[in-house]
Length: 106
Image 1 (spheres, rainbow, N blue to C red):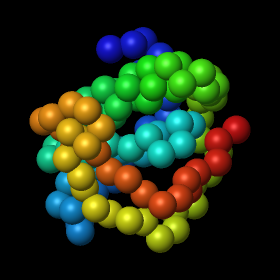
Image 2: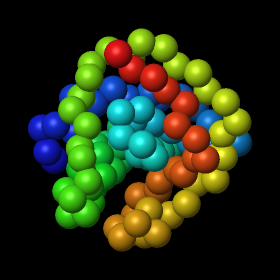
Image 3: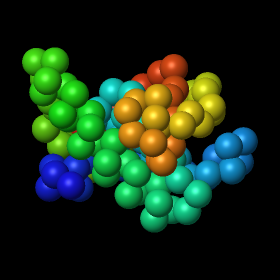
């Protein structure tokens, strides 16, 4: 685990539709994970953050610095389909994809 993955803001909530905890990482567009338990969801998010950063680095894209405390959150229509993580290259974990980026941070 990259030490940077523990410095990004996490938004964690229960998805009744998916019967799992969902973690959003507002500073990294599209970076989300889920898990059957709170701890599993956070652990999966740490892996996803590391993969997001590695992918961005490999593609030559900018990697946002962690900004710290969330200023506010506005959640709109959310696509709550949990997909197997193997879609992204690693079996065994699950990820969540949404059609928007709902958060603004300071």
